[in-house]
Structure formats: C-alpha cells, structure tokens
Image (cartoon, rainbow, N blue to C red; front, side, top):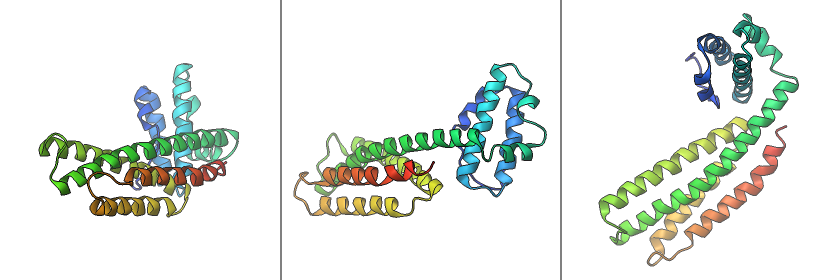
Length: 212
C-alpha cells in the first residue's frame, strides 16, 4: 500500500475476503486514492465503494477487470459523485455516528474506572490490591484513550471543529479536580461525565444529519 499519505479507511479488514486477483485490483484503486488530493472523507467513501464492488464481483464470479478497469483514475472520477457515492456516503456517515456514540459510552465507563483508581491511590485504599487495581486502571485507560482517538478521527473527518475535544478535556480536568477535593469516594464525577455525554450527543446529531 502507498505510504505517501497516512489516511484512515474504514472496513479495510474486508479485503481479506478478496482473492488474489481482486485484492490486486483493489490495491490499485487504494494506491491511487492515497496519492490523490481528495479529502479524507472522500477517500474513505470511494475506497469503500471499491471494496463493496470487489466483494460483489467476486461473489458473482466476474473477472476483476470487469469491476475495476485498468484506468483507475477514470474509475475514481466516476465514483467521486453520483448516486453510488451518495449512498455510500450515507452508509459511512451512519456507521461513523454509531461508532462515535459507542465510543462515547465506553469512554464514560472507562474514565470512571480510572478516576476511581486515582481516588483510591490518593487515599491508599485499594479495591483488591495495588497490583490488580493498577492493571485494571491501565486497561480502562487504554480503552478510554483508544475511543478518544476514534472520536477525534471522526470529528476531523467531518470537520466538526474543536468543541468536542475541548469538552472532553475540560470534563476530565473537572473530574480529576473533584476527585482530589472531595472526601471519600462520594462525588459527582460520574454525573459530570454523563452530562458531557448527553451534551455531545445533542449537539453532534444534527451535524451528522447535515452531512448528506
């Protein structure tokens, strides 16, 4: 695959289902897209169109050249607009919205676990013991960070601005501050995380709906 640009393309795992001929055909499209000046969002859409057409062509026992022509630039230009492009754009948009919501939910639970460990560390009172609690907190932290990156990538793809990233950072800082000053494990950090989740959901939904 081309390395000139690092672009994220969803559903690339599906190319593992392609045989050698179709895999080679898709790679030609993919490499051309990576070298193009198209936006990340358009590259993602066209690449997914190619993946789906390759899968359908292989299922229908068509030759790869009947699905992906030798002139991949013409193929890319053809599917850079039109009903097929719009249909895939809507499909990807819905997929991204679902990923964003799931990522937000996982982030709330994972951050809660990390904050709980942080408070126990301050109080030197552990749920099981230090080692086990550290392992659980690190695992939860990894989940939270991974979902943060997923959400950030989606926000950048659709150019939704910095509001959501800033809200996540401010929420985390507020939760850490409350954990430090609150007595025992009684605080409102979970409530703050939930409120942040619903504020994000309410604000971002119409932005996704306006994409098409």
